Structure formats: structure tokens, C-alpha cells
Amino acid sequence: MQNLQELTRLVCKIAREAGSYIRKERVGFSTDRVERKHAHDYVSYVDKGSEERIVKALRELLPEAGFITEEGLATHTDEQLLWVVDPLDGTTNFIHGFAPYAVSIALIRGKEILLGVVYEICADECFYAWQGGGAFIEVRDEAGTSVVRQIHVGQSPISDALLCLQLPYNSDAYKPVIKRLIERFYGNVGSIRMIGSAAMALCYVAAGRLDGYAERYIGQWDYMAGALIVEEAGGRVTNYDGDDYFMQGDSVVATNGVVHEDLMKAILER
Image (cartoon, rainbow, N blue to C red; front, side, top):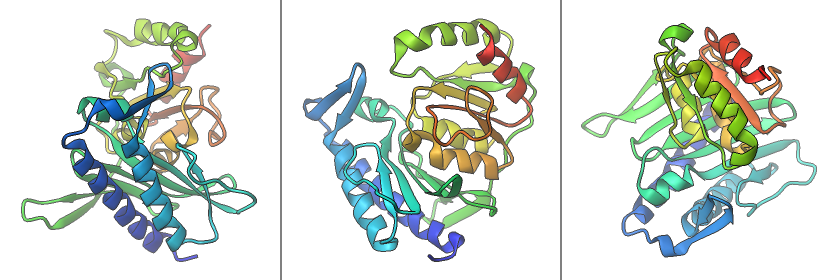
């Protein structure tokens, strides 16, 4: 396997190419070609087309790796290395032409996340990290030149924090939790947002745009890349039980570290 920094650079290119496909397909996109996976959980031909392109490119890049993908177009057996792919995170946003939506790609080995790349299509921002290498954002300046800068989480206390409290599709199970979180934090923090993309919520925490994010009933493809980016940016990531090992679960709490205990206390209240 290539060194992680170089591999991450190549994955950024793959994510951008998939994002370019998604951006082009959004022009003239028709909701007639949207399928319903579950209640309020949608998939379109664009999700599948993006996944096909990503899987093909990643197979060429690292033939020995298996896959965990949202649309299930590729699988794994006993491979040590696994690509975790969300070909279009924020499909509902995409369908409505509402930013943000993104491509998310992570590479894992056992209990390690080796690299993570999240490309936000609307703003043309590529967030990425590799294990032990820090977290970065790549943007284009007015001349189209690539500009890379390292990112870090913010330091706001809970009283000034901007929190993202997402609303998962499993509404019946999550209503008691979100009601408790809103009751606890609404009016007691800087403000609350819901942005519709787990991958981007994590990246915004990493970049200091958000101070905390919590969501349950999500898939590994939703959070794996973004979680590493948060950790490499100096933040903290746990599951809803407060465990640092979150990779096999369906819940994520990601913060600047300063507000983590406040957010966890509210989540664990019964």
C-alpha cells in the first residue's frame, strides 16, 4: 500500500471527480427518478452513478481492499482493508437543490481509520485527513489555483457554541431524544442548526464552523471519513454511550472537546 499522505491525495481526486458528475447531473435533475428506500429516506440514479464511479476508481487504486458502501454496489469478504463510501451524503438536500451535500470516502483497517476524504460539492471544498497527519481543507482561489490550509476545531464553551442536532429518518425512536436536546440547549447555547449531511456536520466541527454535532441511526458511510477529520483537527468523537470506539455503531457525537461533556450529559439523561 502507498503511504497514507499520497493515497489520500489520490482519493481526493476521486472524490472530486464523483462530485463533478453529481454537480452536472443536478442541472435539470428530475424527482421522477427518485426512489424511496424507507420512509423519508431517498436514493436516486445519481447516488448509484456516483458509487459506480467511485468503486471503479478505488478498485484500480487499491485492488486488495474490500468495500462498505451505502448503495451496496460493492461488498467485502475477509479483506483487511475496507473502503467505506457514501457516494452522495445529503441526498434529500441534493434532491431539493439545498446545500450542503457531499462525497465521503474512508479507508479502514480493523479498528483504525487510516484516511478520510469529504468533498462538499456546492462550495467546492475538499476536507481530508490521514492517520497522524492532521486535517486539511483544499479550496480553489479566484484564479482556479488549489489552496490548502490546515484546519482545527474551535474553542467555544457551551454557552457560545453553535451546535448541529440532526434529525435522523428513524423519527419515532429519536423524538424523545431530540426533544430533550432542544429543551436543554435551545436558548442556552449560541445557536442550533440542522444541515442534512452527517459528513459535512463533522467537517464543519473540524473546521471550527460548528462546535458540536450529534446524530443517531446513521450508517458507517455517513460518519467514518468525517470522524477521522474531526480527530485529526483536535476534536473528540464518541458514540451516544460516550465510548471512544464508535466505528461499529450507528451514533456519533463530535465536538471541539470543550463542549463534549455538556452534550453527552444531555444525551444520556433519561
